Image 1 (cartoon, helix red, strand yellow):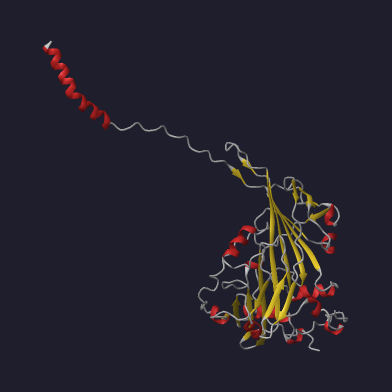
Image 2 (cartoon, rainbow, N blue to C red; image 1 turned 30 degrees about the vertical axis):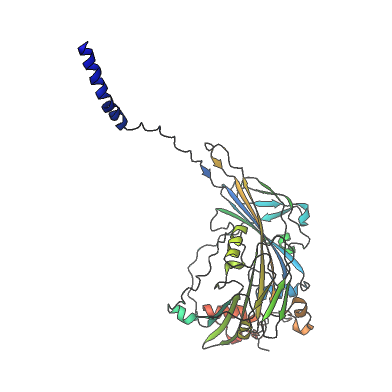
Length: 441
């Protein structure tokens, strides 16, 4: 009995020690979770972009209309202020061409009023040839850079860009620091084995896009280097962007325009200049509506809605609700002649087929991606509305030379549009035409 009692007491004394030892044992590790399945994504075998513009006045040809655009518009008899539409189609395909040559066509809805289909032709890839040395003059001249809406230029403007100094390595600090614009580019021959484009030399291209054309409806693209593409658009060409210009007593120019329902942001710019000193070069004046310094900006290109919203937030684009701006008087004093351009960025429609499988174990084998993007543009000579500009006499309108083989007229640098292209070339350096290359009479 005594022995049992002693064993019991020993066990009682050892129990805390045993419990403490058990408590010190590490907790068992949880079972390892299975690794997450990463779905395999196979990029599309074809990408198709539709870029649709609505233009009024001379607001064609990208961010800044060229004098050539203006002349073609006048020669075609288009009414001042009339709305015009243009369409650019770009197809990129990775599939091997079934039977050469590469062929593709876009089957269009009846509302486009352009027949049943548009042929997407593949541009010939230019063969690499050694470049011949050309007699280029070193860049010379300068740019006066302004930005921001208002009757008076902001403090610290203009920023002067001297191209001779830049060629010598003296680049103005922060020249492009204010601009960070994300721009997506359509498929091209540079990035795709096969590329189809419209407009080209087919009949529809020569006729152009009718003012009554509508993109709404079912579309299909067929070709021998792409899978079958089918999509339906609910967005259409944007409405007409009507720009009104009025010169203030101070010399500033007030810009006013209508609000478009689908607009996501606005951007206005001016480019002009005065003089072309053979020794010093020309002076080019550039202004933009951006609240930050910008020059020859991508802000006038197609901009996706999400990027437009970001740029409105940084005040590089004007809000979609804003319908007025002013070009400062200092800009117009530096360059009385020039061109104004206004852009209303619009919506997008995007399609990706097939939809992403819900099961991550199934690879997402994308067949095609489609993007339709929209923009509206307007523009013309600074301080002049289209009706006023086209109201001159017949002598003021451009005419073709009646003499076959006659030399082109020498450029009149006092006109509103002609200095711009020549001055840009002079600033960046280029061959000068000899005086005998033109007819001064």
